[in-house]
Image (cartoon, rainbow, N blue to C red):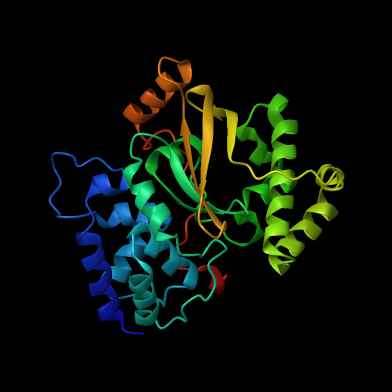
Length: 293
């Protein structure tokens, strides 16, 4: 692993990004041309100390998960992402799915333009790949999760805490929508082993999921009306829209509300307050990378 070359490359990519490109305020006291180190770390779900060590050419070899997170935070294209993996002496991931997938450039370009509304890119299994700051403030930062728990569908049926995002009376609706969407994804992927494993685990661990799966209802979730429970703003009524990548493996989600509604006013307040004091820090990847646990 070429520590110095990796450090120089990370700094060069950080310097070229302007804060508004990733939904961050410029601020009057900014002394660097691009992002600060701690901002890159936050966008990637890493600790600031760990990222600083990487830019100083120190520390352990970063894992594939860390590299994928950095590629998304630094808005690298496919060639740039591959170069990052080569510098870190890691094999370039062959697949375009899962929580380490490279965000498709078209979706990432659109996400960069959505600075005034919560938006995020997820996989077809509802694994969060990248979020703008408002999305993290609205639904929490989950892009650092790995393994089966990276999928919100998996957490929905196995972890009761995941359901606190929505009012209890809305849970049956979301359960039906998630299962019908997964049915469509399973058919589209044509017997993909990743989907088969997820379905098998969920059938075993959740009677609700198993019952809904046996109804064979199928419907990709393109739009939905949601009531999201926010810890500071209460229940926010929003419309959720989805834009699918060409292969259907990734989706750009964005949340909005009609002008003049309470939901629109709450989104404006969320934008003014920002994310600093309203979002409980999500899981972080420290110098002890996932593969060393």
